[in-house]
Image (cartoon, rainbow, N blue to C red; front, top):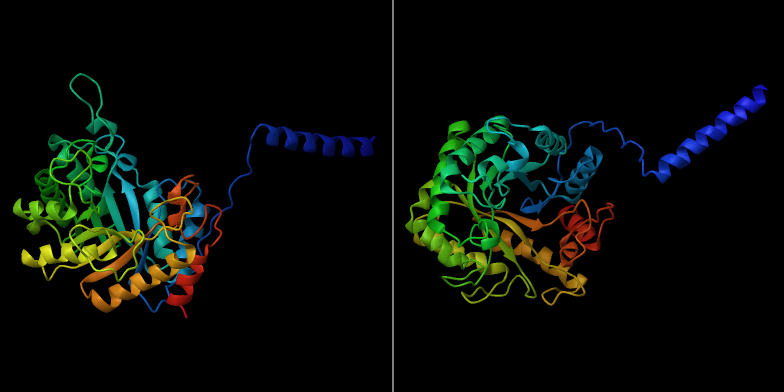
Length: 370
């Protein structure tokens, strides 16, 4: 009788397990315990990566990502903290996931540049008729609300941030609420955000722009040339409301030493943005490349071979070190995605969603930690 009960219990346990698998029930994620604080060992502190942990659900995956960043020798990360994720209701802030990222980054010895903005909360998009605008559109009447978010974020992480980026690629229609881009409007937003950030922490570094490299002319439906956009920002008085300029620089098919030109999109295009800054008396302000890199997709016409991607990436870091004393970091897009993009975008990453290191990862690690 006892033998039968023992066998029947084992059979029942196996049946429950099979039913759970069939129903898609997954085992609980691994328990995360932070170890002793780590430090980043690197011979090239200019190296930085743009992580994408915003939509990473599992805590152990957040930690594993940051462990790999630290081991690669990148002391700085850029991470996105969407407004809509933090303030679902006016004045009520949820820092749960952001705290997780910030705490784990600190544990790994990483410095964080926080990208703020992007997704606008539903309550800040509601129209008089009850409808809502698109989630990337922020109208002037809610600039003060965004300023409140900036204040709350900087105050909450005071002393733990390397800097904050105000919005992202405001010179392209996609990021500016699918409406005509507006450098003067962005300058007003920057003024509000800068004042609120400094109110929360006078020492926080406020980065403007994160401008996308583009050749779009005035009146384009897609955006505006980044050089023209920056000129109009200065004309609108934006120079008084940022401590550093953020920019994006993708090499596309060109090596990093390819000379800059007003009609070309390449890695050294940021030198032309720098000339605009110097012309407006901002030579003392640094720059940060918050997105950069090369792509090795076999099916994208603007990609390079995997070998060239490695060579160009390392040479790009080296170029910045040797020729750009005003460049604080070169942050490469993107370290890892939580899940496959199923597009050429997957070929920007250093590590797969399953944490398999790509040759680019091994090459940068060997270069940063010879």
